[in-house]
Image (cartoon, rainbow, N blue to C red; front, side, top):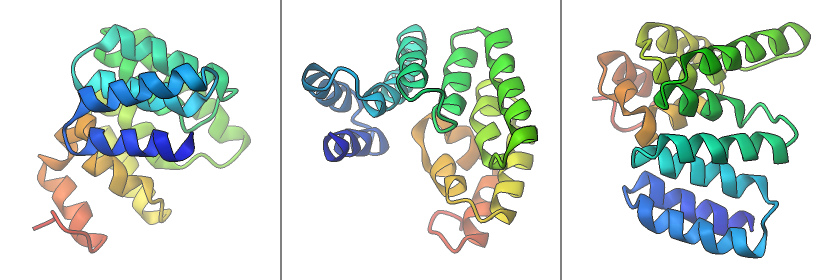
Length: 168
């Protein structure tokens, strides 16, 4: 299931979200409780503007993963895109509360800030993530749902400082 889910995630990155959604549907028939499927399909759905469906899948991913910190940022993004600002802000509050108990990478806040339209705070989180040497910074910069980051000179600057293509 991991390989199949990651193949579908590649569709997301190359702009073939419908193919990825179809692949996730087949995988979910075989493995209906595999959290990664819901997480990835939620991102695919968000990329084609199906915000309410994205929220449902991201919620399922959070539940099945037992509240994984990996899922929360995408749930916050989905909430924001669905117009559920207070729910998105509650995800930020959960991440903040968790960061008082244990290490939470700063970059995890960025997707929620992007969903809420707060690019300045998103870049502050990504800058701190870069200092933490968190590889999620590169993923967030290149993910289709967060294209507002790469379309900003600060995003290209981050890529350049990481030595990745696309920063020029």
